[in-house]
Amino acid sequence: MKIGAFGGVDAILFDLDGTLVDSAPDLGAAADKLRTDRGLPSLAYELYRPMAGAGARGMLAVAFGMGPDHVDFLSLREEFFRNYEACLHDRTVIFAEVPELIAALRLRSVPWGVVTNKAARFSEPLTAALPLFASAGTVVSGDTTPHSKPHPEPLFEAARRLGVDPGRCVYVGDDERDIEAGRAAGMRTAAATWGYLAAKDPASWKADVLIKSPVELLKWLGWD
Image: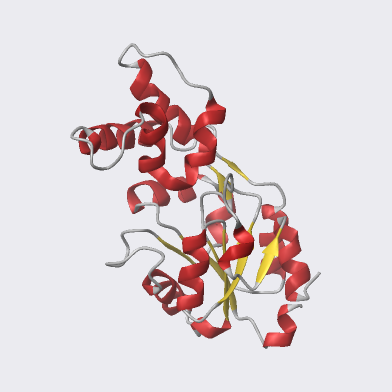
């Protein structure tokens, strides 16, 4: 069913990693450097990629089999953060068809923005370095508000910044917490299945639509 059946849409909001950008190569490199700096053998990138959506927690789990309760977790996490800052956009790329999607939104004068759990120390320089985000109306980071997804407050903040009613927004993300946050904010939700979905079942998230590619969002919106 196309979105037209639900009424108008005033803005589109997106998750960042795994939805608009493929940052897994840089995240994996930052984590693997922790190993090689300690004389441990490098791990295959394919091991890191499925955990990219879980950030530092996921990367340290792959690199060292370590969870947040480990005595060294916090110190290694900060070292990982420093490594990541040093290679933030060396290998990160925009997913295919995302530029076409954003161009279509701009053609229709539809405002768009980003709501990510990535901390501002990473999200702001990353989006500033990629020309695609010059037209974004807002970037709400994981520490912009007192809450992060799946809490709806970051989505409410993005809607406030864009000057739109949350109920007239669509939120697009590649993780269950994205859909949960969007639903809690009263937004229509689209599950992006081209991101880091290994061992996940997006059909169980109760999104309004599953989209296999960015331009499918336009078809669902009735704007193709």
